[in-house]
Length: 271
DNA sequence: CCGGACGCCTGTCGGC
DNA sequence: TGCCGACAGGCGTCCG
View 1 (cartoon, rainbow, N blue to C red):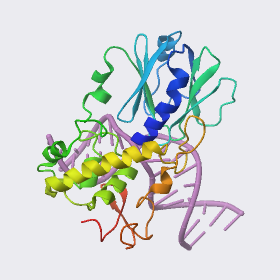
View 2: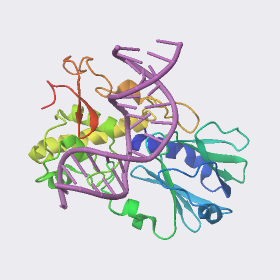
View 3: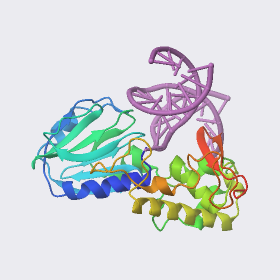
View 4: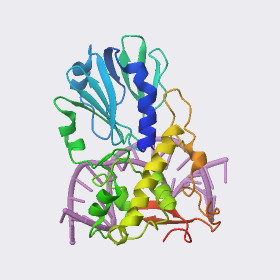
């Protein structure tokens, strides 16, 4: 489910309810996420104040007094802030219970998400240490992407979804950005001009920023912290629109598998 | 180093 | 109606 805009939306939604509050305890009804959540986490976080929340790539970082909770929503994860008395629904696996009577509740039907407790500098954690730049940061430029693309024969769609190249671009927004930039998703990354890679950087930036402004994309199960969906699904130009007219030229949108992921593109606009 | 394939898990949908 | 396979927003790991 969540790509960068959905994680950012979750962050903005939950941060005001969490920052400055104190953790009472961690309630884990199901510890078998992508990696098992050790019971030592419960002891580690109990009683600590939440200093601040941040996002790195698609990870949420909850900085406590002596360490950081590293949370990933995987494919189907979502977060709500609810009174701790709210009965949990199926797949509501973990509550971070606060002393004010509320809790941060993680729902994740497919359990591809994860929760780690990290002491010491969180950027050094193996899951974060080798990530590429943030797509909405200054380091992500046309020059950077051009340099990264040199000699790469992988399809550009796989290339921009590679978290070593740039983080946060998942299947929806990769498709959308390539359409905006007029680049065919199967084209080898190393065979795209600097000019067009510059356009691709701007397309990625633009589509992610627009999606954040709309509260992300809700297809199946993504909800914001208040239970409302995000509205960017209405703005999707190619994703999930097989055989429908291209918003630019009217040609039918084509769907095919590229690098093991469903890809949507306009055969006329994207070369 | 690079690119491709796989598997983790549950829910949903389309076709027969 | 019921069953069954395909597929779904991610990503670490393994293999050649």
